[in-house]
Amino acid sequence: MVTRTGCNALIRAKMNKNGEFEIVHHVMQHNHPLTKEPLNYLHRSERQINQPKEQAIEAMQECGLRPIDSYRYMCIEAGGEDASGHSKKTTLIIVVDLK
Image 1 (spheres, rainbow, N blue to C red):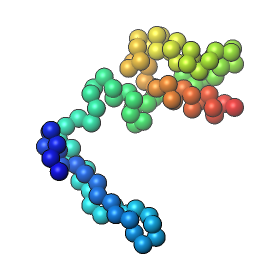
Image 2 (cartoon, rainbow, N blue to C red):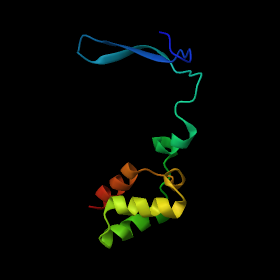
Image 3 (tube, rainbow, N blue to C red):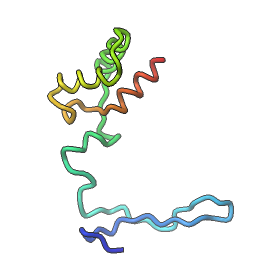
């Protein structure tokens, strides 16, 4: 397979006799960044929700703020979405776990 960057990363799978997929070959080495730097905060491995942030989300939820409003507030306080250290989805997961 040829890509614009010449990257050889791939995963090949086949369906076995039980109807399940099996990985038959993989190359994990990329020759390029997986995302643009400003979007790295969206990766699951980059999300940083510490205890004070969780407590703040919980307090805002108890005060009647919608999850999206809590997220927007925390982004403004942090200086932008990329500086907040977490995503909207992470905020929603915390709110759902509170119920």
